[in-house]
Length: 459
Image 1: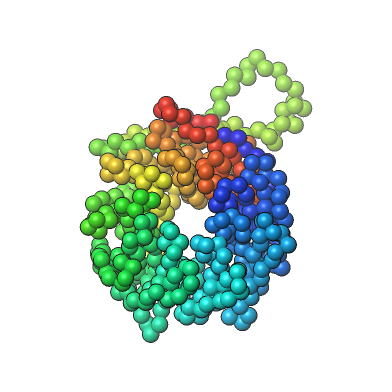
Image 2: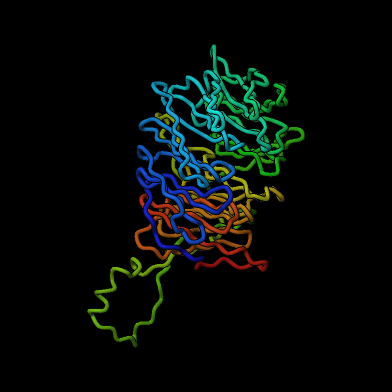
């Protein structure tokens, strides 16, 4: 891997959908950089500090959320003189997003009073009353033709279907939830999954015409669903729960065909390797070296702390994984499957059980078994799949990156002082990786995976 130098950032950073540009928030300024050279290609000045940025799908426009003001500003890369400002007045703006056609912006007001669709073509706007959530509860079909918007009125949840061409209401139907948490269209646009709040375990599958295709409830009288994700192929629906179990449903009968438990003790006959992050002392033979004291003192600051390097060690079974017991007297316990994501080929998925924050579980869907366990020294901050292959990258707030592929796992040292990675994002073509610190960021170019398998190693 090759790393760029570090650059300043004070907020959100994200790649454009066409993989050509990188948008970076620096206080009031929106900096657009070329991905290959990281040279500044556009610089826009906003009216307040940038809280949120999002690219339009065509990568021509970009919006900035100035939630302190509150206000939305949008910019055009091809027409730098073009500007757009959206202000809801006393209603405020809690969240903003692009529509799939890249010519409309959807804003949600404070207290979820209304959702407004703003047109950049003719300045028209359309209102949807009583949206259920600010940042959640809105989902678009893959072809970009329809939007499903969750609303709530008279103490009941509804799904509003809108056409993304005319923004006319195509239909409204009530759903059987106590307190709807979120909604997702299936990748093939044939079904909509809805799940209830953690207080009620309920996953509902609806057809676009409002028919309930299936109701799934794994258990009752306990905290329920925590995370839900469709596989990219659309054939599987993964449901992570507070009971520390991952359940996978199929799209034909909507029945559960796999249940994956996250136990604190791993024993045989488990065949999955357990990779544990360890510190290894650097073994240097200094017996015949003659270095002056001034040289040693001048370079001591640049030397690795304690002269250690980080690597993965394959552990023997049985092994007890580090876990925490959440307090029973506090809400929102750190327990259950809080992190869940599919690989791009739908053959693997990773999970993190939140009461084991340093452990990442990788599952093989083809063989319905555990593929690997990664045990880190620090809690896992972020993890993401390569959009082009089965390669996983994660960070823990340290100066290292951790990677896993079906052929092994390895650690990568980042050659930038004082850069502790707290977040990471892939470019859409898999060629570049954005690494964020609290105040800085850098990019790493990533080579394509070789065809030949390689053992677990460290770089």
